[in-house]
Image (cartoon, rainbow, N blue to C red):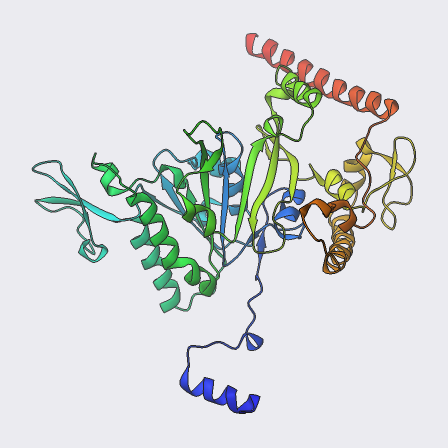
Amino acid sequence: MAKKNSLDDIISKEFSDMVDLSKVNTNIKLWYDTGVYALNYIMSKNLFGGVPSGRVTAFDGKSGTGKSLLSARVMADPRVDLIILIDVEGGGHGRELIDFAGVDPSKVRRITANTFTSYRLVKSSGKIEEIKDNEVPSTKMETDKYVYTEGITSKIRRFVQTVVMNKIDANIVIVLDSLANIQSVRALSGTSDTGKRTQDINQFFRNFDVEFEKTNISFIFTNKLYQMVDGSGKMVASGGEAAVYNPSLTVRFRDAYDTDDMTSKEVTEQLATKKTAIGRTIKPIRATVIKSRFGTEQRNITFLIDMGYGPVKLSGLFELCKDFGVIKKAGGAYYSLPGIFDKKFYKKDFISLVSEDEENILKQLQEKLTVVEKELKENRSQFQANDINEVNEDDLVPELIDEDDETEMEKEENFSEMKKIMEKEKEWEIFNQRKSMS
């Protein structure tokens, strides 16, 4: 039998393209910030960043759930050097959104496209013909006979090749908004698609999954959900299986009142706030990781988007820390955070306490969450069961707090705080109305 060293020598000699993983670092180089600590964490186990560099990330959900805004917020991460924005006709990334999210426009290079494959328009007839990428002219895109349009696949291929050939070492993010608005050339020309769009999407990801990892390019795409017509009411992502299986990370966003894990009372309260002043600016979003190659699948959190400002960075953090057992019940309406806060506190005071020394406290919370993650993994390594009926998730989670049943005192305090905020916003609204009339 050949010794290990001899075997390594043979493999190295005969298969030069084989990579010894012990000699390369395949860890994620950077995790880009989504603008919400709790959302970052359920995606990556990292409070400071949720979108991985060198991988494909999908944000999907119904319209109005913040997909475009959150992808724009990722682009605002100061560590990003260059952004390629593929703005599909009908997409959500106008200059207004870029400015709103705080993205440096000098970093953004925008390209527009509506198909993955290339095509040409026949001037004499108006007919649209799909063509091979190498048939697209390198300079003159319009001739006497044709108007040429280069597809997304060709554009990204040329960009990636440029990065590789010039040995560019930069933090690059490519954002496609949105996959649902991309057509096949067949559909664009008015003929039956017959599955061509799904083939185009599959081909795109087959071309670039490995290339994105090699060049450390982060590729983010937004996608819409649509309801199946089979009567089941099931919501599925546009683009078929390719849109589901190719990303390393997929996060689904829903309005919080649409989630099936809320009580009827909570749904009623959420809907009622939409009639108030605060309800017109604050939107609660439920995020669920539906696919992850980083051990975070099926994690979920509720956070807030302020439609006049953007994602609320600290929203959902209390819920996250409580569910992981980092924040503990301390009797009555009080909570404690051992090792970080010296005294007990009310839930409503948590954000103000964190804000006093945000960066330092977040680092300490990350350390505590890392310890809990280790305990979770150790518990699960010992888990055995004969069948699904014996599975009790609570047995796998160390020292988690019971569901947060608010005391009457805490409910009264939270209601009082909400009422004050609503009254202030109403006063501000009246002030602005009077100012505009004067």
